[in-house]
Image (cartoon, rainbow, N blue to C red; front, top):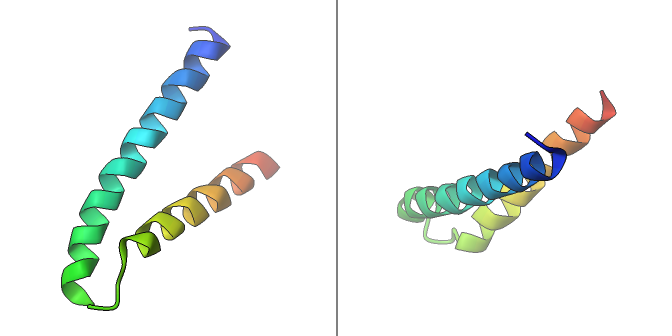
Amino acid sequence: MSLESAIATGAAVALAITFDDNIYLTSFFGKISRTFRPRHVVVGEFLGLTILINRLHRK
């Protein structure tokens, strides 16, 4: 597998997981709190991914 192929596969998987998580988390937390908004899931998702990437990059 080439580097370009691995990067493309990783990006596609990350996009699919993020999209899937956003749907599930929005529906779950939307039932718990009326003040919860889908943007909370999106911000949390990107913040968590950024923290994970930073931690992996520092090792």
